[in-house]
Length: 237
Image (cartoon, rainbow, N blue to C red; front, side, top):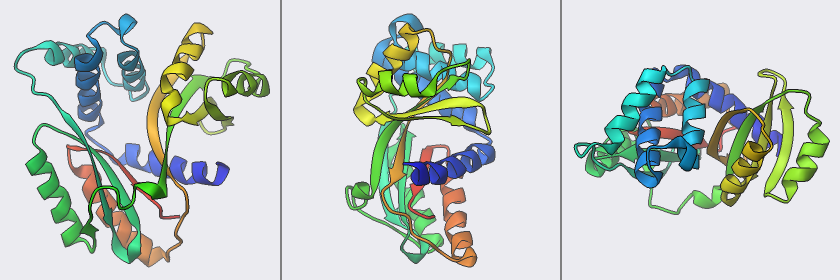
């Protein structure tokens, strides 16, 4: 997974650095987590994970509390989680995860971005096979024996454990379906959880020239500017 991780790592850092509205998007995650499992983090593992992500993004505590209150109010509409798939310039596969309260608005916007910037929105399932879904956890590096931790986590669905030299955090990649079991293990063992999420890693990477990459980047950036778009994945090297 090393090569794929390096791709994902670079993309993720770029995306979160560019997003000015990250708090809004975390707020949506909080709303969905509360509606799915209630407002008490102690009894809602998904909400606990999102709150950790909010801390990693330096989201003020007041914002988190407002999002939780909004989620339990009758005025708050339900969000739908959608996945769009399309081809960008030069045949690059692009997969978009969106969270919206208006599906007609979201699909119209996404289609317009593809049309204006040299791509085309496809049908559901046409590109999903090009990406593997994984869960990712980040924990504090407090003198942990990585080999021993990886050995323990294998039984809980983990696939790779390594130290991120840039953040000095331990990264744990696992099967998509192992999110709950890995989270429970880490919490019970008392590890300091820095963040948790799902991700999609391309099974094959496509190499482009710098000029071609710039064209694809324009489409990616436009998609990421949309408030309904949570994540954008590509198979661009």
